Amino acid sequence: MRTECPGVIRTYTDLNDPDTLPNLKLRAERALANHGLRVLWELQSPHGQGLTFTEQASDRQRLTRLLDAILPAFTRYPSNFFQNMQVRDIVLVKDFHVGGQFRLAMPAPESDSLVYADNGHPQLCMAGMEMRTHHEFYHLIEHRLFKDFYFRDPAWLALNPAETHYGQGGATAYGKQFQNLGHPRAGMVSLYAGYGSEEDKAEVFGWMMTPGYAERLQDWAKQDGSLAAKLSWMQRLLMAQSH
Image (cartoon, rainbow, N blue to C red; front, side):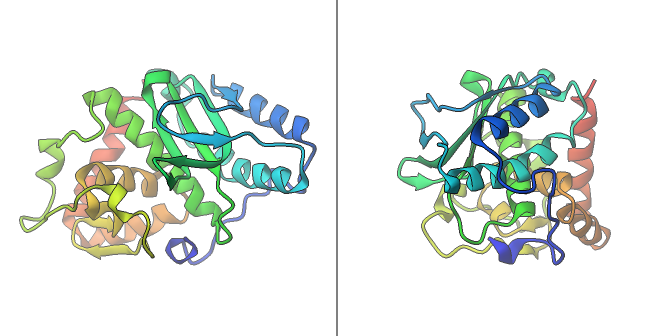
């Protein structure tokens, strides 16, 4: 994961040394309440499984690391954006997996929630985790707007170079030594974006919203008309859904 992070990895310092578990939870709940969001500490979903954080020192460190990435991410949005997207709950767990595949996050529009997890990845990059915070949120946004996670939006597809072909979906990237390289070809912000139009959208949104990533996206867009059009598309969407 570190290989895909910006050259200078931003370190978030709002949460310094690991605190007690009740205090960490309280700080998270207060921070997200400012955005009209409720924190849930247990996952109840038929689509995935995750464990709750405990008072163990290792769990406190893991929760601190998770909060260090996601709390700054939510400050990037206009105050009413979450309500407009009907997001009510943020579920925070550890060791989360879907169908046997470990995941860092999952949109759950059926319960008006987003799931974020620390999976103990030894190479966790804070900027990379923040980018995934936005990426997975976009999948929920897409579902809200089009009632489908996999909507093949003709307006978006028209922004691609003529020779563009997508892969078989993001799930096919799991279980292999995948490195999400940046701007591998015209119109694609990352290698993962090429796995499907839904991942292309989520990657552009995630990069656009994350410091470090956003600057690289903007630089590439200056020389790549297709990528510039996709960035502009996402900027307009964010503005339109912020009123």
